[in-house]
Image (cartoon, rainbow, N blue to C red; front, side, top):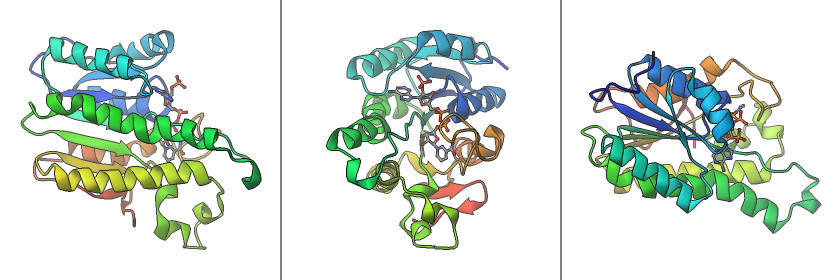
Length: 237
Ligand code: NAP
């Protein structure tokens, strides 16, 4: 399963991969023959997770220095990247609506949105050296305006204004970058409610939660770009 020494294997990098959806994504990409950089901000947790089948690289998505250092390491090891999975995310605090502060929003956006841009900026030159580059932005159905207005869906009743707004921002970022960079396939994947620390253990398995991410990451050349899907198919914006 480990492909850390196969220099001809395609190369993938996953953020926030010491646990949850990121870890399962890294495992599945390694299982599909990718040389995977399993990145995490904690070197202790990241190294422990990396024994599951991929090479650990320390990366905190909120730090320019950390991301630059990781990009330099990937460049020195092989010079290109085929798949970037922007996965690291936080919910931020859940409060009474009167109590949300600007600092709460900054905290959420710094990881969930600014972090994604920081990764795209740092790794674009390495992606552009791939003959089939792909970016998968892990989003959420909670970022869908259509789903929010569908009162039959449970998501319509979940009050997560900061988190949902960050995921809506990721969705718009995804379509804009996909349009501006036609040679890179860039899509947004919704894991659906998945049993991880983030969801308090509620939801389907991490295997099910990574189906849409893996489908985008491994889609054959000419596959979709600028789209939003979960494991059942297209998610409405
Ligand atoms: P999780 O188990 O809490 O994992 C989140 C990961 O993000 C952890 O590895 C965490 O690292 C990492 N992370 C947070 N801040 C970071 C930073 N500054 N730099 C690097 N890594 C950082 O949550 P999850 O459910 O797997 O979530 C993964 C993605 O799926 C998120 O984008 C989330 O919004 C999305 N999603 C989840 C669900 C769900 O139901 N679980 C549904 C829809 C979308 P630490 O271990 O160091 O904290």
